[in-house]
Structure formats: structure tokens, C-alpha cells
Length: 148
Image (cartoon, rainbow, N blue to C red; front, side, top):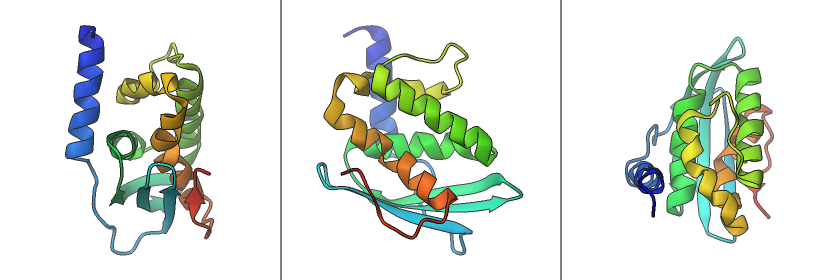
């Protein structure tokens, strides 16, 4: 395993064991639930948005290391971003996971550690669950998000 792969693996393990923003927002402006029946990942995402800006994001749930790390990294990346910026980030992340190609502008930051997931199509659903749940929260979709 190369040094960079070891670093990426260490970041994923750290975020899965000690997820950032793993809590509940008392009075969120929106929330959504997500479920990956294949892996058993479950999460609830809480958002506070104001004037089109994500002021706070938290999540609770359980799942595999990739799912928890992705939710944790996502929560760090989108705080303070506009909904439009977050949508662009979602699209860049989705592209990374389906092609393995990192954007040239380094827009994904730490999210790039999940690039290796593209080699395991069944794990892409684990990595994108939080993101699809975020999309539902942003649109106030009352339906539970599922990766199936």
C-alpha cells in the first residue's frame, strides 16, 4: 500500500471512529432520514439554513466506516457554504465516486480520501448515503432516503 493510500485509510478510520458534528440540532430548519439496506447504514441529518447558507449541520446514526466517514467529512465541508455551492460539491463528489477522477480544482478537499471507493461499486452507496440524505433535507423531502 502506498503512503498516500495509508494516509487516506487513516483519515477514513479517524472520521468513522470519531465523527465530526455527530449530534442533534434541537430545532433544525430541516432534517431527513437515510437508509442503506444493503449495508445497514442509517442516519438522520439535521440542518440549519439561513438566507441560502448552511449555518449548521449535524447527523446521528450508525453504519460502516465509509458511511460514517463520508457523513463526517461532508458535515465539515458544507458548513458555511451556500446551497448552490453544496450542490456543486455533491455533483463533484458523485463524479469522483463513479469515475475515480478527482477534480483539478481540488474543490473536494478532504473528501478526496474517498476516491478509492470508486473501485468498489457496492460501497459507493455507503459513501453517498449522507449526500442523498442532505439533498432530501435541502428540499424538505419528507420521504426516507434509501440507496435501493
